[in-house]
Length: 78
Image (cartoon, rainbow, N blue to C red; front, top):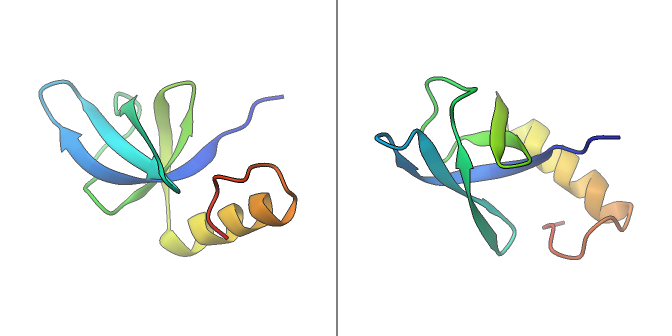
């Protein structure tokens, strides 16, 4: 089973085609090679260091809330 988590883009490095994303208090650098036209503030689904696609803020918040309610991670915002 694979799990992709929604995270908010904080900064983008266009030369490296990467971004720093935040999931709660956790920040991580991910590749943007698989997505286009993203900007800081956008939400992306991340899996093994790659942003897979974008999603709306509402969908991201709904998903994060479900993860938190299920007790899957203490670092996810409710």
